[in-house]
Length: 149
Image 1 (tube, rainbow, N blue to C red):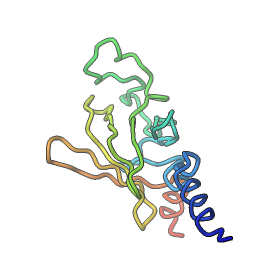
Image 2: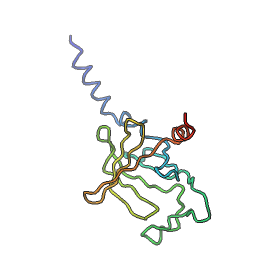
Image 3: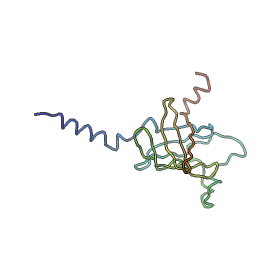
Image 4: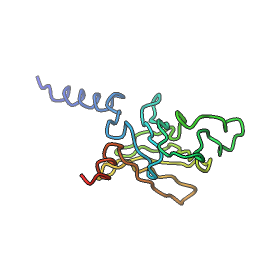
């Protein structure tokens, strides 16, 4: 009796399992490219999302609420806890079909996420056919790089 077909079928079922779809390399805390916030990227339902976990920018003029939101009713929402990455689904090494919200401008963009070989989170936002990428780092890695280690 040949068990190879059963073994291959089992392996394919395991590979297609939603628990395997989790992506530890992309989940966790990320320092934004400007170094002003830490975003927690984690599963939200069947998708991947990211919310502001901490504001690092200091000063009297640093907003604490979503004051640039185009919806006047949402302008009092606190920035900490604000979802800024929503609805990303995995497609190989890339997470796509999501949206990125920029609280500095109040604008949302179609977006994709990927981790590059330098272990940075590449956040690419697009308007029509024009796309721009930002490179986020892990907070512990960013601190190590600043200290010259």
